[in-house]
Amino acid sequence: MGWAYDPGYWLSRLVFTRGLALVYALAFLAARNQFRALLGTHGLLPIPRFVSRVPFRRAPSLFQWRYSDALFEGCCWVGFLLAAAALGGAADLLPLPGWLAWWVVLWALYLSIVNVGQTWYGFGWESLLLETGFLAIFLGPAGFAPPIAVLWMLRWVLFRLEFGAGLIKMRGDRCWRELTCLDYHHETQPMPNPLSWYFHRLPRPLHRVEVLANHATQLVLIFGLAAPQPFAGATALVVVVTQGYLMLSGNFAWLNFLTLVLATSALDGRWLHAVLRVDRPAHLQEPGWFAVVVLLLAAGVLALSYRPARNLLSRRQVMNASFDPLHLVNTYGAFGSVTRTRYELVVEGTLGDPDDAAGWREYEFKGKPGNPTRRPRQWAPYHLRLDWLMWFLGISVGYGDRWLLPFVAQLLRADPATLRLLRSAPFGEPPRFVRVRRFRYRFTSPQERRETGAWWVRSPAGTVVPPLSLRDIDRAVRV
Image (cartoon, rainbow, N blue to C red; front, side, top):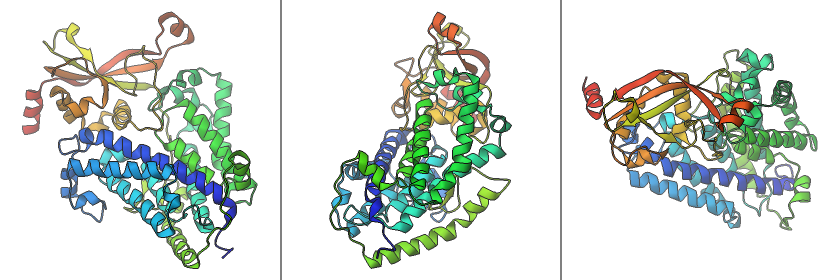
């Protein structure tokens, strides 16, 4: 069955699946740590309310049949433990049916979470993990040669991811065409990291070089994935390097890391063997029946690729969309527009009179900018969902129509699950009033940084939510 399998990618497959297992582990851990406040029975967007109005066919999920917070947490723990064990190599010790079942469970559990996750799971990297994770089911364990068709399908995912991101930039914001987007991006990106201030302060000519390198990679070099080795491997290596560079400059959950992992599936196995001294089994199985299954899978992926491919060629290209409820073949993209000015919402509470300016104290978030003197932290590839959505609210408060007031109400109750999503709360008891203010943020100049030690300068830009008590919110809900 030499036409269906390629033993030369044995180590590439091993590196890819271990990296994917790590992403799965982080995804299930983040889901477990954050779901009660965001999606739980008493959360901001409760799953029971969602499944009562959205049918199974639109959002296939285990939780369509039964939901409880304990069941959700149990699924997260099962997913995390299976992913951690796969990272340690346990799945590779199984026969082929055991491998298939192992990775099917991982995919099905995470699909169940994403399909009821609503706004909190509306990110492109959720679909990317599901699409990639589904294909990984058919790669087989360490005792089998990697199926060639699956390797090509993984390249197709990587191509759509990179080429789609390149096209949406060129079709979207003119600053990408003028090579000026990085004059703003490092400062206005959703969640800066410890090095973002330094990237923002790089000379502007270097920013132009960064944008050119991005365009060259995503719009030109990415076609090298279709070439034979060593050209395909060289293309994948460029993606690995560029994604590593992006990981240094910002917090984008597991998007960059998963893209990097995806690229390892196309690396020349001889290169990896030169770096990783891992002994390959003397004999790799190549079952004929499984080759037929993979070919049927490839035919299905080809059929489902029509709409994503058409979207790539469309002048009205959309970013990060799924065309089927199983998230099998999706369309991707990022930063079709770049904000020039950063606005942040600052949430404050008081124990006293709302007219007493001295009584207001600020809630600190884990990742998003708050206190100007606090240096941005590194969180990626972990995902802070509330922090990300708060960034969108800085652009338009409409993004929080369904959950912002419930969030304020939970702060007024000092709800333990909600407070665990934050870095710190200003009081050890429920506040009388909470308000949400809008501020303009910018990075300090080098001189301001030396003089004040601050990373940000901020100035008031209005009030989004006026001082509210629980009674005010209850009255608004009744109305």
